[in-house]
Image (cartoon, rainbow, N blue to C red; front, side):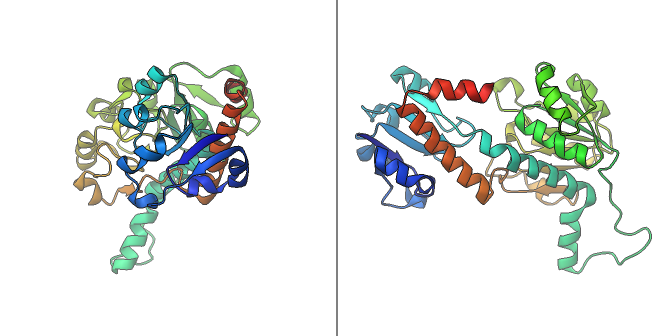
Length: 329
């Protein structure tokens, strides 16, 4: 019987009975909050499978201290927390949970877009502080999403889910990708009413869009894809939305653009130097901030748990490659 160690008890709850039948399972006795790299070294010596979480690093030292480790099943969409080079050297498989995060992240991107344009968070704050303007013809005005153009940079599954929501609200959608979408994806989007969607170069998109949403994964090549030059291409009435990765945006350039009125506002769920947030952003009424919670719904977390367990069971049955091919089809 294989041994599986979990970084947290929550990740073990879904399908846990199945896991207990198929595996010897080890949970952190110290509790999730106090779990450290060093407390894992002893149980890792027994582990065939490690269930890691996106907020805990899986270091080279940990990997090399686990002589039986064959699979790292990450509870998260990315692999930024895992030393992939060490896993490759050892021939250890690594899986993630991309599908459960699609809808929650798209929901938050749309909510942030709505909040910054309609000034929802600002109005809420001012009401609580007793600083809100009274009801009046020209008071408390904001901007509608209806009839506006959304430019999506990174038209993967999250970008496509955001496009569906935007079109349902009467918006036009243009997008930029490494390459135009395959006709099969475009046909699927048409089934959701996304009928008129246009490919643009990055420069064309920045100049055309009323809202620019970043939905692309991080690679070194796209660090600061939104820099001072890109921000100056945007309309002075445009808003920037980032629910992808903090390093996509040069935050000092963003602060400058906001102060000088080069763009109308920004809404962000991720930050360049996370968990630190550039102080000036905290002080601006035309900026909406959330604490990296794009995937943070109960439903999403439960689905991620199930995805982790499915990945482990597929690995046990030697069906990982088959599962990947089915997801990509």
